[in-house]
Length: 328
Ligand SMILES: NC(=O)c1ccc[n+]([C@@H]2O[C@H](COP(=O)([O-])OP(=O)(O)OC[C@H]3O[C@@H](n4cnc5c(N)ncnc54)[C@H](OP(=O)(O)O)[C@@H]3O)[C@@H](O)[C@H]2O)c1
Image 1: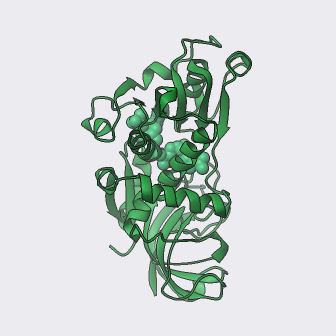
Image 2: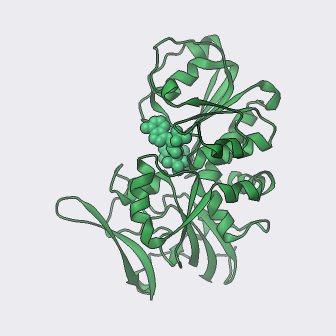
């Protein structure tokens, strides 16, 4: 028997959660069974545990979009009992059984081997959010945007994606400006942020297709009018990496910044990201994200705290990264 957080939908379409004792026969099909050590709480998990966003098709459902753990049993050619693994994406925790469980069974092709440089807890302190921040930085660097190009703006800077992006960029020599509802926090400065603009300054778009050129690049996890605004403020040849929708999923803009300033809008998807890119991103995270900064941005909760914290993250009240100790 093992414990898992299980979501159910009642007759009024209300989603409720409880911790249940399950058994091996409850696990889905798959060629690798994993003893899960840690999962994390991401914005998407907040949506899922609150029954928002239409991400889950079938109930009962075990949420948790990522996990780290040890292979218990495997018929996959690349994995054997005892191997340490990480999983992010592939719609695990949405349409497939997720990481808020002491055991999971998945398609082995979805796994990444835990790099030697980090332990299972550090892997989940990085988690989906940190992995996605790295993908965004790789995307802007693929455009040739290096530290000498100028200031980089990170929106939703004290969230999970934002925190890791700030730390990676500042350690990589970029001048980082945050857009945040928590500019007064010492926290952002501890991640290497040099300037902070209150998030409200970007949430109203003045409708002008071009505003003063400011940013060499933007890492955006907010979307909506924040993204409309920053597109009009990108420097000539700049790029915005669109990651998230914490502030809205509508994008009101014009083609003018693309035509007159040659700016680029780069879509970032971590869920179906190909295996080769995943391995590169994890290698770079191990090499470029200082463990001391990772510790500063991480808090740990138990499985029993996920439901309440899931509501907090949707309200923008969770700072940094939240690791879920499924055995705690
Ligand atoms: N594309 C992908 O593959 C991918 C992967 C991971 C995450 N995401 C998306 O990226 C976004 C961030 O994820 P996360 O896990 O980092 O979430 P998070 O920890 O909740 O961070 C989001 C941050 O955005 C800011 N924010 C919240 N509500 C806002 C609002 N109404 N208007 C403006 N800013 C707001 C807050 O930062 P401040 O307090 O600093 O303002 C908050 O901490 C989510 O939309 C998530 O779904 C996408």
